[in-house]
Image (cartoon, rainbow, N blue to C red; front, top):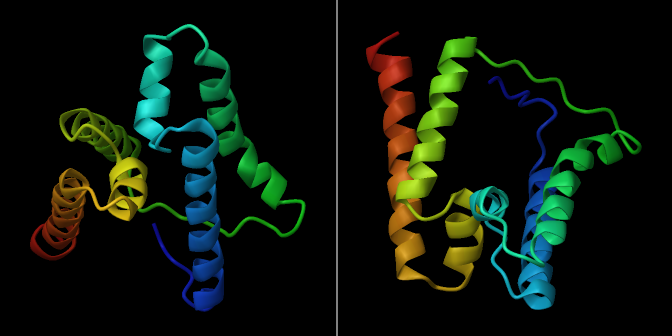
Length: 143
């Protein structure tokens, strides 16, 4: 993926971070649940009565958000420097990691750290470290 650094501003990043934090806080206040995407999606695989509707609504909101964004501004251009096989392998590895880590970046990195969870700190350090190591190996050792 290539980032267009010319159009990047700290204000858009700050605004996005504030929106994510606000949404996560509202979700825990109104629903009593952590906004961890892997857990919300995983709950659809073994649905519990009364939980199917909000899970589907949450995921539909994630899918609809870029379309709503286009009403205000065009979506930024994106270019991914990876083949289909690499993307599939990466997706599977992330999925396996979220199961072993009992959560994903949103559940641990956003919500868990905000709650002061030691388990979330360990998970976040683990997946961030793995990401740093992967980028270093792929871009500097294998390139």
